[in-house]
Structures are given as structure tokens and as C-alpha cells.
Length: 290
Ligand SMILES: [Fe+2]
Ligand SMILES: [Fe+2]
Image (tube, rainbow, N blue to C red; front, side, top):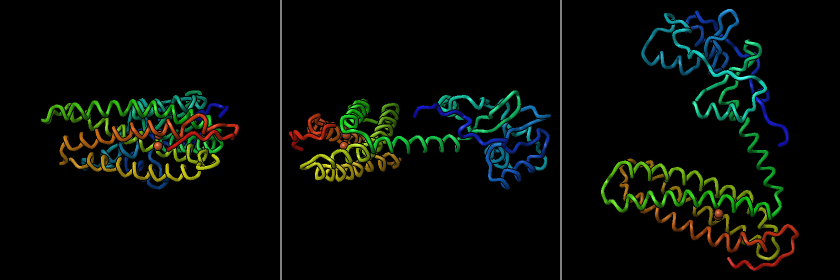
């Protein structure tokens, strides 16, 4: 991608707004009618806050009467504001870090638009699709480099999960901080592994299929292995969801998965990711065995 994406590319222009002294009932009706979840709150054209569907839900949860309260009493004051030319990456990072549901886009002290998390997700999906298209046309050497770089990242998470599992196993008693860090490390590992299998299916499988000789067979085998590994990873997610499950059993499962994946990555690097197999010139020096 050559041009940097900015807020202007994804914001909603001229959003519906509401007055500071309006009854909350009117705000709730407007949001429902237009299917929106965020409204800038204005008084004399000046921005005073943002009212969200969640603010209204919070008020409703305590059985307050929406007719008796004003927008000002439920809104979030001092909303996060940006200009239309702010890079989208910077705004998305701030929204994620501070858990902002939206950014109000300002121009010369006036509201110009709004960017919500839904807009940010739309941007993310388009960027990921672009990246997917780039992967499809990736030369073998580049695909190899991408997967090897990913392996470095996955190995760091395997190390962390293994250390957390071993610490729980060493205790043989429930010490909550150790269990929390095991659960946390396991969750990160699951997310990374799921993404890793998907990445290899998208990037490595197509280039392997093109390798003369056993390439297609190996690609097919890799897909099957990933299905099996996904099943193993799922047993860990199930154990994480089961609050009754013993931490020792979870630690044993994580420890087993870590060992299996380390070995799998070692074999993958020695065979499928061999530089002589994934060559851009298409000339095969097929020395891979696995
Ligand atoms: Fe793999
Ligand atoms: Fe891998």
C-alpha cells in the first residue's frame, strides 16, 4: 500500500448529533430510528460530549426514567477528537489502548464526522484482504521468509507457555498467580497458533503446490496436519473455558502441545521450508524428506 490511510477514508460525514439539554428519550429514539450507537452532543454548534448507546443502556439498567434525564446527564464529556487527515493507524491504536468507542472528527472547531470502532474494523478487513491478495502472489523465497519470521514469534509464545505450565506443575498445589499466568500464556498461544496455521495455509500451501514432484502431496499433508493441530489447540480452549478443570491437567496439556509444536516446527523448517525447495527460479533441488 503506497498511500497512508487517514480518518477521512473511513469516517461517516455529518453524523447525527443531539443537543445537550434534550431528554434522553429523544436521543434513544433517534439512535434506534437511524441504527446508530454514537452521537456527538452539541450546544450552539460546539462539541460538549458524546452520547453512546451504552450510556443509555447504563441509565436504563438502573431503572432511571429516560424522559426525566437530559443528554448532558448521561453523556461522556470531553470525547476523543481527531482531524480528518490523522493517520488511521494512530487513531486505531489510541481507540484500542483507551477503549474509545469512537473518535469525533473536527474541522475548525466544528464536527465534521465520526469514526466508530465499526468503521475501524471495516478498514482492518480491507487491509487484511489486501494483504491476503499480496500473499497469493508471493514468490516462494518471500513466503519462506514470512513463515520463518512467524516461527520466531510463535517460539517466543511457546517458551512463555511452557514456563508457565512448568511452574504450575512444579507446585502441585493451586497458587493463583501461577494459574493466571498459565491461562494468560495459553490464551495468547492459542490465538497465535490459530493465526499461524491459517497463515501457512494461505502462504505456504499455494507455493508448495507449485513445487514439481511431491509439492502437491506435501501441501495436502500440511493442510491435514493443520486440521489435526487445530483440534489439539481446541482441547486447550475447551479446558480454558471449563472453570472446573484442574490447573494441573491444563498445564500438562499445554506442556504436551508445546513439545509437539516445537518438534513440528523443527521438521517444517528442515523440510518444507528448505531454501532449495522454495526457490523463485522454479528449479527443483528436492532434498526435502518430510
Ligand atoms: Fe505448520
Ligand atoms: Fe509452522
